[in-house]
Image (tube, rainbow, N blue to C red; front, side):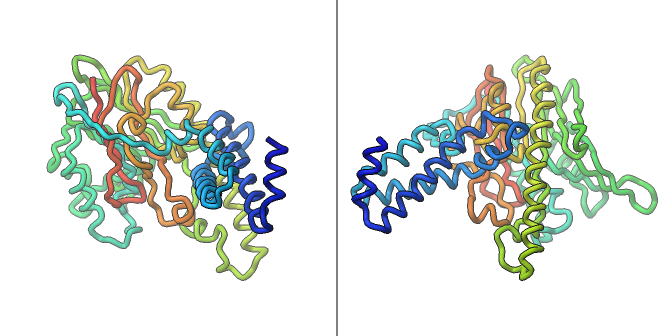
Length: 383
């Protein structure tokens, strides 16, 4: 192979020689990215970054395949082989489902997971009606159980989210885990932040687990009875990179004329990203123990803040099935925040619905509505 590559290289013109060298760099990068799900960021964070860039590496190699085919050069096989070796990563990122059987309502449970970004409390979207639109969306979807991450309850006529969901949508049961409370002047806790599970089924038990390295990220859960069996609904929010819009805009930008300042700022950003990988790994260890100790079949709704080609995802999918891989279609990207990463790599599936291997799922949907910086996802769980 080495002799063949050398002989082929000699026959190319100067431009194509440069293209082939660049091609080999991206082949190597793609192969390295396949290691990310199997190497803990605590061991080496380098592989975590490479795994994050998998869609870019795969896309560039696909472009090289097409380029060399058009030139009628057999070297397209290098990129083609590299892509084929990553079928596991590919199947976790891209899915094609044609047939969706109808469900038996008595034996199925419609579940939704949605990071609502505090129902746009601080009007990040510039849309004063966004809270009402989110509430109407939930009402129209009419799922049996909905898990909210970055939940904000609020009270009174201006922001009565819980009251709307209970009275207008018909969720008779709610379990909230509040992590932050901003006190009003009268000393009453009116602004309640955290996570929530709303259910049309009564729950017979509930609880939560707080991560020691960040109390704002946590696990909450309820146990309901469905099809004569106890099912645990788990709602988890795993730590993010903690990057703000200004950070995303700064990476790779040229707006700051003081290069030394920009360089230092970018180093700080990647330091935070690295800490984010470490923090998620520690939280995943807690989540894994919780899953292993759960005595019932379960459905896990989680904002994982990591992609399918990551160590974090791989740890969860060892024990549970990914509903997207069973009945999803397309790329299923859920993070739609406005930043440079989404412009470069608009393939960010970081929200998931997992479930026990002993139950099935159908009709996985990544909802197209952009009501938050995350899209809602839902599916039917079959018993």
